[in-house]
Amino acid sequence: MSRSTVDSPVLHGDVAHLGFLLGLWRGEGEGVYPTIAPFHYGEELVVGHVGKPFLSWVQRTWSLDDGRALHAETGYLRSPPGGPVELVLSHPTGVVELSEGECHDGTVTLTSRLVGCTTSAKPVRALSRVIAVEGDVLRYRLSMAAVGRDETDHLTATLRRADGGHP
Amino acid sequence: MSRSTVDSPVLHGDVAHLGFLLGLWRGEGEGVYPTIAPFHYGEELVVGHVGKPFLSWVQRTWSLDDGRALHAETGYLRSPPGGPVELVLSHPTGVVELSEGECHDGTVTLTSRLVGCTTSAKPVRALSRVIAVEGDVLRYRLSMAAVGRDETDHLTATLRRADGGHP
Image (cartoon, rainbow over all chains, first blue to last red; front, side):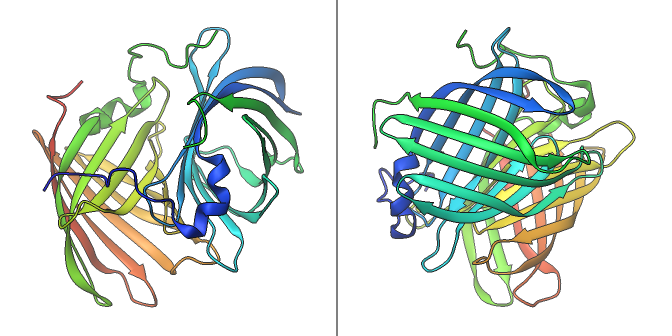
């Protein structure tokens, strides 16, 4: 049997309260950091599920000048009963992130418990995220401690549903 | 400007020697572990790139009985000049993996330098992978130290190119 997915699986109960994140989101963001010039970027975020107790998270950004790929991140959101919301993410900069937090009223707040960097990666020590959905608009802000700096603002973006609504 | 990818980017020099991994691979595998019954699974692996110094890695497996989703993993492969091959991966089991190793003659050998587990994850301590491509066949084996066990064989699989050849 070669079928690789179950058609239209039911959203798992563990992540039902995060269902407002599901969908295809597109928009633009702005980046700042003490060590670099401010920059703007386009962004697409796809949050999906396969009926298991996690959501998938696939994000990529691109230059608004010429469309070239900038950053990306990919991983999973979990929310086991009685525990924190959990985010496990990989970054192509050679960074893995394990963040935990909570979700209330359409806002997910996450703080890294572990950030791991490959031999060649620029060192990142901590990441914090606030992701808030109101209607068809998703806004997030991300702060980061990296390259020897204390945690400070890094990214803010506003994305809109690009898939015609909540599945 | 809304274009989100550059059409047909050139493979970055850092990862050119890993280009044999690029493509869509499908096949079947077998899992064993001292704490569970042996199992078989279908698998799809997509290795891609966007012209930057990394390859993207998206894998999912499914039950051969009913097609339901089983495991998945997603992340990036890097290979900066003069350093190890680096793999950063997220697992929906609440695990992040940072593995490093080398590539010779179509075989990539990776050993975890860091494995991080969320609050709710079953504890994984170490992962080792050998991924070998010969022609249109990709074989891998993975060993794992988890749930208090020493590192031991866990997965073996044989995948074949499903996209009509090397891009």
